[in-house]
Length: 289
Image (cartoon, rainbow, N blue to C red; front, side):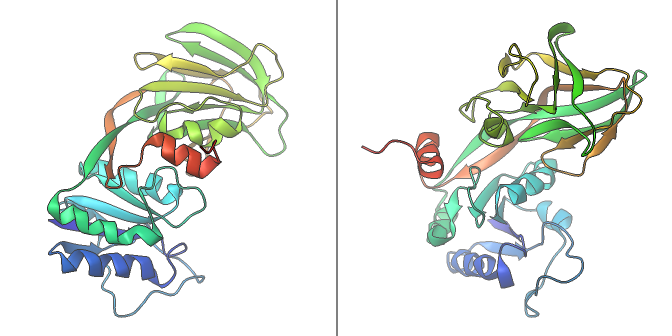
């Protein structure tokens, strides 16, 4: 078995958690390769000189699993690389909340279960995101959490129309709109008043951001729907699209953002046996018996 270890050096200082995991895995006969999830530019972090860092793309070609160390943002980033090679992901939480992470840093010893095959793999839905301008696709990406359309920093509210299979669902003025997967339902969508959806479900959750209309409410749609977000052709207003918190793409008036359930899925490794409801209670402070 081969496992790629992918630590976020800004979260895993000195790559200490990744090195501890490497030792545990090697002790049970697992081959490992250490790879950074992104290039480190400038100061702010010191990498141990004795560690040989390898190329993520090359190592994933022959990997059985990717273990990443950081917050949910690190997992979201790693998912794009892992999915390209069909490699499942196990997240170790070094952030604050970490809904997608399977292990806390104090639970690293459970990684030894991997060598014995004592784990399960959970499939998570993703979204294909495309921007059409004058009928042509000018931007495309894939989301595990969400796609967020928001106004510019100094712009006033946006005039938005939301369509489901080309039928107008709602029209409203707002700061923006979130289209989330069930995995992303506990992220920005929840903060904006959207529902929490069990992460293995397959739905699209459309949640307005600060809407100026009583009728604009979060809506859960089936997996077969195609959601389209349209802005009025307003010359002086700027809007941006961000997929999984990535670099924002600037939209022009009249652009259409199309979202549909992707054929690609993210596969998350489970070793603890904790249910989603256990995690929800732990992370968000649910009722205690």
